[in-house]
Image (cartoon, rainbow, N blue to C red; front, top):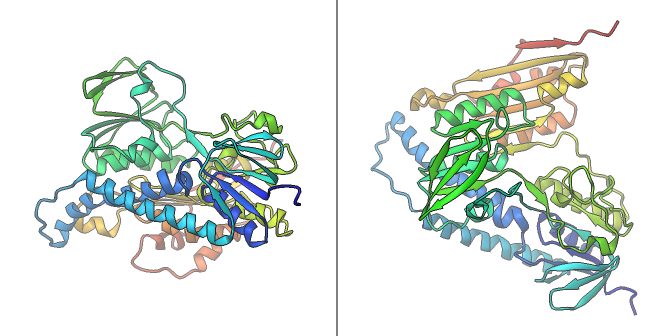
Length: 461
């Protein structure tokens, strides 16, 4: 008789947990995956995938407007929100079925149940069944965080509910200044809503390059989105089907929907972690892990957003794969979390990899900045008032490209390719030696020859 029921028990059927389960099963491990909601996790079910579908659809109205400059006369277009929701749901259901099928094809078993720790090696399912496991992987992701309780918080929705609204609200107030807040502000505005964004900081996109932050804000405001910074929402009142949002500055806003997107918190509550001896990282509230994703308990690992390290789906997938290779493939793989490309599917889109200008100047004594701010070729015909930003951050001593930041159409697609060069430690000379592809916006990355700024830190005497 085997000492344990399974070799690996995975809590969470999201992208990271699924990848780990499949790879471990491929190595011959007996694997069980517990998912209490839907296979696919946040990204597939109520995150990046449906968000990107919404973003794509929200661009259509602008494309119709821009078409006139190219000679197209298009009859007045109409939009139906319930159709969008219905078609999105069909696509998500297809992806969920694919995730389920792929796990089962690998030989892993799926149980549609919540699972909590009863002990270091024992998991309790919702039906009362107990399962013992040699190894346990926690991949429960994150959940929306509304912050401090305020009067009327029960009237506020998160991105989870935004994907299932019965109708498109005419007026929306969104609190937040990060990925999700900006993306949904652009989505709602693109479909025709009047959008106001409220953020507590001095400017949106905290942690991004300052030029990116300023450029995105200016472009969003050009598109009719009202951005109020240095302010928070104090309370929300409901009057029939409408809401009044009271701001910390004393003003108020009327709307048909109020959405909070002020961050996500690791999904660690009520998992029984204390019964297993799994420690929480006091700095971020996520499960504490080492560089191998191992927790304070040697046979229990954690990956993805539940660790609150870098909350991106590809990171969770890479960590899950590395865990399975290390533990079951006997091929130790440590995930490199440096120079990870990321995109904000705001409108305009942001793509970035590597260090911001401020980060580079704090770390390196000589930093050169190359920046281009220009009107894209499409706008010369459409007449739209919009500009693209391209920026390279370079170590002036070694000539290595430390960071690349793009705001504009297809920024995410461009930055994925540029990230390869940054990861390979390409130099500015390597960029310069690369032939430009004309006419494109991205050719600016290989044609900027003169620094727009040069920062040299004087050595202390």
